[in-house]
Amino acid sequence: MPVLTTRLTRLLGIRHPILLAGMAGGPTTPELVGAVSGAGALGVFGVAGMTTDAVHDAVARARELADGAPVGVNVLISPAVPRPGADSRRMDDLLAPLRAELGLPHPAPSAHTPATPVQLVQAGLDAGAAVVATGLGDPAPVAGLARDAGVPLIAMVSTVEEAVLVVESGADVVVAQGGEAGGHRSNFLVQPDGPVPLVGTMALVRQVVRAVDVPVVAAGGIMDGAGMAAALALGASGVQLGTALLVASEAGVPASWRDRVRTARDDETIVTRALSGRPARGLPNVLIGQLDVPGAMGWPQQNAATSDVRRAAAAADRSELMSLWAGQAAALAGPDRPAAEIIAQFIAGALDTIADISALQSD
Image (cartoon, rainbow, N blue to C red; front, side, top):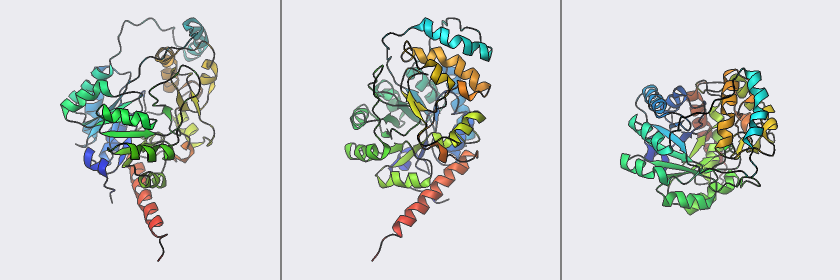
C-alpha cells in the first residue's frame, strides 16, 4: 500500500499518519488498538477509569495483536470542575428509575481510590506502550514519565493558547481538536456552566501549525480521505480518528450506538455536561434529557454517578441510556468493517484527493 510520510510518521515510527483517539470506557478494546497499529497507524488505548492491572493486561494484549507495531496509552488530565448548586440526592433520585429499569442496585459507596494519570501511564509503559497521549489538560504531570521512558508525548488541545502551553510542558505532538469532534472537549479551563469554546477544525489547525514547531495532528469532522487530505493541506502532519473508527469491527461499541452514528444528521449532535460534568459532544437521548437539569454535579462526580447506568445500558445495547459520543460528521461513518480496511480507505482516499487537486493545475 502507498504511504504518506510526514513528520508524525517519522517521529512515531508508523507507516500512516493516523492516530486512534483514546476513547476510554469501552470503544478502544485491545483488538481495536492492535488492529489500528497492525494496519500501520497508531492504536491508542483510552485508559481513564481503569485499574493499573487492567491497563497492563490490555496494553500487553494490544501489543501482541499489533505484531510488534507501536501502541500508545491516553489519559485524561483534568482538575475537578465543581458545579454551584450540585445536589447528589436529586441526582440519585433521577437515576433511581433508570437503575430499576436496567436491574441495577443502588451503588454502595466505594472505598476504592481510582488510579491517577501518573499510575495509569506507568502501567502502560511497564506493559510496553511506545507513546503517551493526554487530553483535557496540561500534560505536565506525566511529561517526566514519557521523557524518562524515551517515548513521545502527545497532547490534545482546543485553542492556540493551549497548544503553546503543552509544548512548553514537553509535548512532542499537538492534537488540535476542532469543535466538530465527538466526545469530551479538551478545553483546559472549563466553567461549570455557560458557553464552551468551539473553534472549528479548519480555523484551529492552521493557527496551531503557525504557533508551534512540533507536528500537529488534526481532529474533528475528519471521516474520509478527502478530510485527511484537507488537514494535510492546512499543514497538519496527520489526523486523529474517533467517530470514524466507532464502526470498526473490533471496536467495543454496541450495535445501536453504531446505528445512531450512521443515521445522525449533520446538525443533531449536542455539547452537554449532563453525563460527566464536563462538556462533551454526542447524540441526544433519554439519558441526557433526564439528567440535564439544575442540580447536576460537576466533573468528575457526575461522571462517577452515572457510570453504572451507562455501562449497564451499553451491555444491554440500550442506546437511549448510554453515552452516544459522536462528532458532527458521524453520518459519513459507513458500514461496519475491519479497522485495517478503514485505515486503507483513508490512505487511498487521501492520495486520490491529492492527485485530483494536483490535476487542477493549468499551464
